[in-house]
Length: 143
Image (cartoon, rainbow, N blue to C red; front, side, top):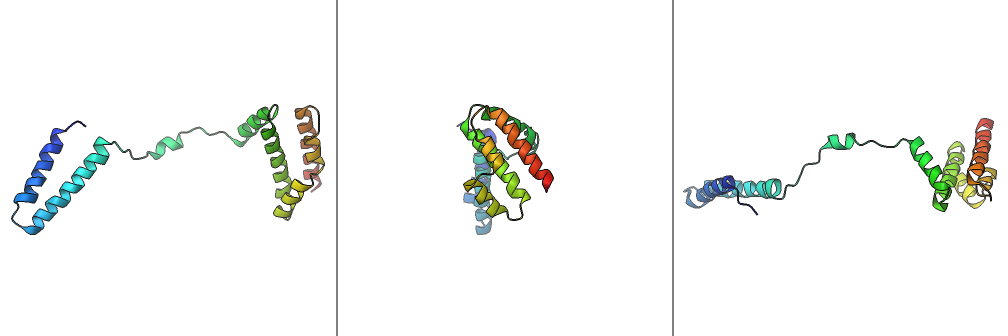
């Protein structure tokens, strides 16, 4: 810990005021200011606790929903978790357009509809995904 000259000077002046001052109130005010000053020095200068800058968060480039979906489809070529997430997205589409979100969500998870059966069928996943999305599109156009 490097000792700063300003801390020594200001701290010693406040300490002398706390010890040598004649008035009781002046001594306690000097002790109070000494405590505040040392706390500010400790946390602000020595430990360097930084105040978060909100501008840094605003400059972070975030992915759009399209970019996230493209990444998910690329991961789904080889991964089972990404495939199940795409199935959940299709379930969410059907649940959103239905009148009763919760019951549709639970019924599609327990009894998959045609689009989900096509998506989970054997064969090339991308072809199955395209067929499933065509079925979803046809169902959306019906409503």
